[in-house]
Length: 400
Ligand code: LMR
Image 1 (cartoon, rainbow, N blue to C red):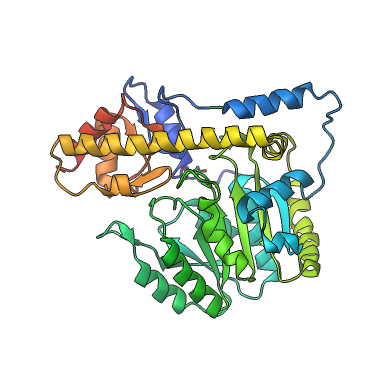
Image 2 (image 1 turned 45 degrees about the vertical axis):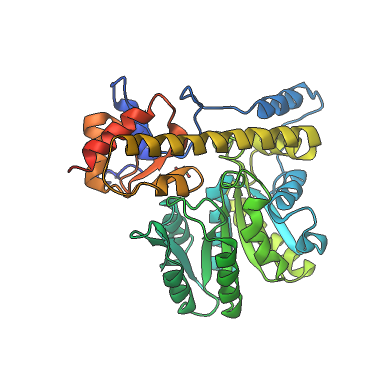
């Protein structure tokens, strides 16, 4: 009965790792998925995460009962504080409902399912370009996806006028997906002044902001600084949604730990919204897993552990910045034509190189360098030893 089923293509991002794993070359390099690697090219479990896990294991009274549908209450409270700030008026007024979800993707999906059922406007505007999974998540949830201008390939920066024009002509109430910081894939963020202009437009048109916050702490190295965009939209008293992920900033990729917060107009609305979120979650996966959320709660509740985390986070962000500098210098050193300063200007985990899909395919075939076909490279996958290999590959590819 399944004989008609056609083979689906691999995922454009996760499929890069599958291809990389099959390559026997000793010089192969995976710059596809956004996952942190050490200077030795190894995955990293943060020390503070190991300490938190030890505490959890040694706690004999710990049980493995089901969490509530909304997840671990303390994790939800601490996650809301992390993104909205300790002194957030919306939290103080109990206008925020936060539910634990399966990392960023799960949080986006639960939020989208809720909007498709309970929000009058079904159109969501996503930036062009954006993370490849965004359109799929929103379409499958029943929303209709449109794009707004974001990246300007000529300046390799933000197309702020295009963005304002597109959002300015969006229908009233349309949902707008915004990357809280460290835009994926471009590494280009609005300045605070540009955020303020975007905020004014969104509020004046009654659009609904839906933030994807997957890189808090990775853009500027500061957790509060990276939450500024979101907080501007909360202090103005309006509504918004925020999907948080702890995959990158705590290195909890496979633990699938994240949160969805919906900031509402009143505490009463927030509690009704939460009751409906439970109806979205229960038939999807019943309730979320306990381990990752317990790690996060252990770290966020303890001042020492929290401070240790911020140091680890800054070290990861700084290593990525140093890779940007090294790659930029290696390209300049080879006299490769073109202005490569965007490599050091862009922020977060990725560089949007400007290489086209033909050049990417060439680099994979000839140099065993794996990256997404849009020319995005995960800077976190580079180290001092591999920079020259990448620079040589780019040197050869630009001649095509
Ligand atoms: C990425 O963009 O590489 C990450 O967000 C990982 C993923 O799931 O795509």
